[in-house]
Length: 192
Image (cartoon, rainbow, N blue to C red):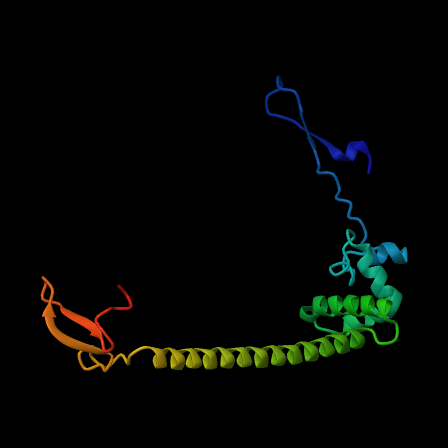
């Protein structure tokens, strides 16, 4: 492409105005996807890997390529419908990361470890619930014991003070007409 092709002149109807210069937009240079960059090949417009391995994240393809290989990734993506490819790529990258961390078990090792942790936490939760039930039972028993001991020391609530054996009506009343209570053993009150 030379400069003459990009600059076009337009002539106007009047001879007094100068010709206008218009520039065509600069060509958009797309960088190759991370897969094509790492594989050192030309990235075509319809590159199968470009939507899933953007040039900004080359580590994603590097990890998947190290474990599965580029040809296996391409074959796998070709066999899937386009709507499932993004999920398949994220699964491959996750599995590749797990394989690099644990070459023997990969994702299965992580799953087993998490299942063991869930089992331990469920047992711990069961022990905590049993302890909580035990503490609640102790609290209830303590309150019942406390109520029983306080009812032995004080007069029953449903008896009136006049009928109570600890009090007697002496027939006297104070200025407001209230009853005067005294002890069976004498007139001195414990509360006075």
